[in-house]
Image (cartoon, rainbow, N blue to C red):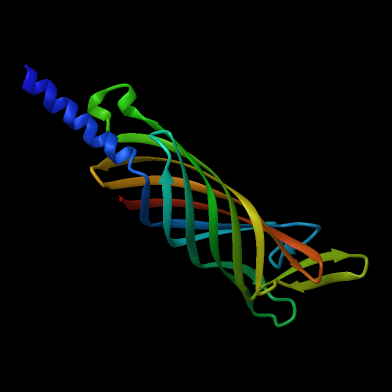
Amino acid sequence: MSKFKLGALLSVLSVAAFADSGTYVGVSAGYGTINSSTTNGFSFVDGAGSKSGGTMAGGIFAGYDFNRYLGIQADYDYIANVNYTTGNNPSTGTQGSINASQQILDLGIVGHLPFGLFANALSGLSIFGKLAVGYTTTSFNGGTVVSTGSAGQNSVSVPSNASSMVPVLGLGAEYGWNTVGLRAEYDYIGNTTVTNNSQTLMNTNNGLVLLSVFYHF
């Protein structure tokens, strides 16, 4: 009986060591979306007010756990080559499209709820939430938006890039064995404002679904 108790205690302590071990680094891969909504009376050439598309995404991250419940984390994520079809360009008569890529760098706090509080058999499992401040850089290739007024139709080119400070919210679950862990999460990245010559054309926001592997030192 005492050997069983000792083994159970060592198992719990092993998982606790994983959860409390401080510095960690990881890599992520998954799927990212870039969602764009026009503003100020603009629309895409086909008349739509919003476009959305997705592609493979990836990233890296590093963090520090102060204890089992609270830590700090920095992330870099990249969403590449999302393409929107926007209708015939009024200037050229050809089918228009916008290609968008985005980089996100953020820093924030991560709060954990370890399931080991409820059952020893679940000691390696936890859910977590992330609240961060991010900086986005969005690159555009091609595309126009249009507005219609008393002077007729006004066509404005989408700029080659746009940057903005944004909120980042995340929610996920992770499981750890000794120094290695797996994580699944969803991140929402807030609006980046896209302007050209001081005109606000549209806002973009993002969703990331990521699977990650990470290592605690």
